[in-house]
Length: 279
Image (cartoon, rainbow, N blue to C red; front, side, top):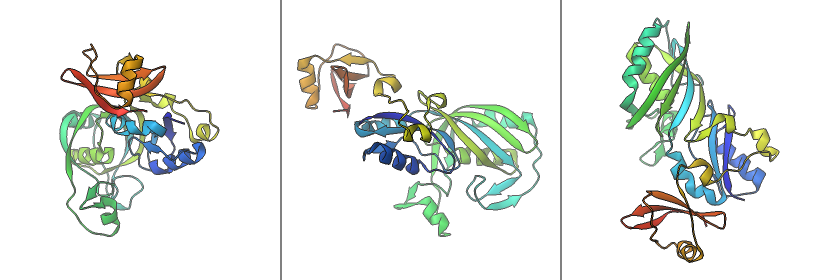
């Protein structure tokens, strides 16, 4: 049993919980997700099953889109509403100030990752240091914010949509925007509405999965890669992991043989070489 499932992750479940549930329901050990969502967050979690776990790295690299909410006037240790409150004060900002802040963060910027995250420092996860009260230097990474759109602003709540590259912590983005505005604020809700071509309206609930009423997807359904159908001779080479010559100019090709997806090959000089094998 192999394929890709778009799950609408509910609140208070970890991404690992979802993987374990799918593994149990489908009686399949090879299950992996393609981008962690915090327990607070809901929405698109792409899960690969069976041979399609080999696509995890490719799918994790896809851009992501979220709808987030900020509760103004508080600051927590986890940078979201589930954490311990560190500070409280009234926040006085205007809609125009928020829009100005958004404009400053679109593009590339250097983000300090949250101390409550699974990033490893010296072989140990940051949240483990945080829980033990050990201070460590937090890694800084450059991320690309493609778009920020203010959806609503009412009293102490900001709701916005953001399109970002992989590895962007929305909690950290909110922290940095609040610092720019000179007010306190923390993430109170987060929904991932899209990852690459995966959209929340196409996602299955946990109940759907438990009832086996979900849609299996394949690579051709989710990756913008041209398809090439192999003949018998070409398939023999590909099945052995050999490079092949194809009279094509595409950077990558999804190779199919007798209606089965067998590999993704990438062009290098004059030959196509294995990138992901699906057999």
